[in-house]
Image 1 (tube, rainbow, N blue to C red):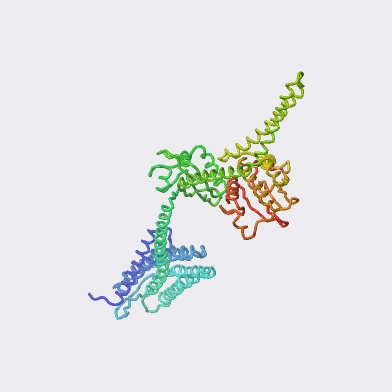
Image 2: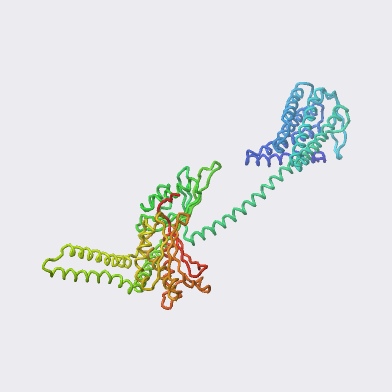
Length: 617
């Protein structure tokens, strides 16, 4: 049996609609929130059902077959119209709800007269069939009495046109002009064509066949095209996402390589769940097993007891608003020994400002710490040598200062011996002589004790120090040398200065070095200008500033930048280590040391020390 073009075309329409229905139904199954795909599936099924009904009517041999085909075709048309309302509502995300519900209500109501009044919704009775040719194939056209209830179905189409037109205008105004034009515009156009064709055939009795399926397939194709754009865009996004993921994976590999090369371990702490994810390197640093569950207390238990509280305080401060932290601490892994760990971390907050997680990186800095400790010991040894050398420079003056009380002791002893040879010794005078001997002994002993402590102390022992006492003790060490050089030492130290935090001997070493340098700068200066001034004052920022100023010739401009370089000196017999060592000592105390040339001649060395207690203003 040969098939004509009508059969082939309408069969293709049915197949195309069903194929699109299957495709978008599967798309909806993969993403259940994409309701536009489901409503399009129902629309395509309705269009295929109507197309099959049209083909059945055109090939009908009796009036009964024609009427039955038209009756069930109206069911497919109702499915098509109702699902089209849902498609427009979900795809354009706009439209007046009452127009949509009116369309659905009228179309659903039209199914009642379709089955209960006459042969179907369109004909109360089909009286005869007329045969014409379409695309060279004979087809049937019905002749009969129209069913007045047909107006309900056509009114539903009119309401559908109004609903879609209103949704399209709203979408256009909202800026979605392409969809408003292609989807809403095509639906209004093709539904209007179908409505006009129905009126012409059923009310005006034009002897033409139903060809609404040709209109419906155009509409379905337009809708599929718009949905297909989204699918195609989703595919492109998927490709871009895949490329992005590949790039992220590559970056992750590079980051992992960099982290491994830098000996870093990465960890992430979920604050709410108190769970820690850690990289293999981090677990290796802290001595945790690869699959061992971790909490923050497990980490703190690895920290040495002396550092544990400070680590806890730093983390708490970061969680309460600091946002990040940097800390170095010691840990004791299970395999024994002690490791120094440097950690840096960042706190991630949620929308309410509450901490959600902490991301951090840790690395082993034990070798650096050991090297720093060795450098500290070496620096202390060099500082000790510098003190010995400095006392060597002051040896003659110190010997003179010691010789004075010793000579006085000798003279008093000789005087006491003479008094004792008398027949009636003057005991009161002898007691006074003994008191003088005791005082001179103490004075000589104090000089020796200061020298001994200055020579022996090596490691830093910071404590609260009185600035005035510190400067007076240092001046006593150079007093004899200053007298010998005819240099006047002036002090300007307020009594209410706050105490500073530092090591007494090391700070004295700095002061002593600056005082000796100041006196050296005055060797070729007139006698009336030979004076060195020491001043101290509250420098702000919780520091006390001490300045040692001389009235010499100052520092030459070509040597000013190099004055603190090791082994650089302006003295004929200098070692060039006094000022570098002094700067190292001050920086170790948390202060700074610098120099300025005075406007009227000479130079002033300044250094700062942190205060040891709160300043009351």
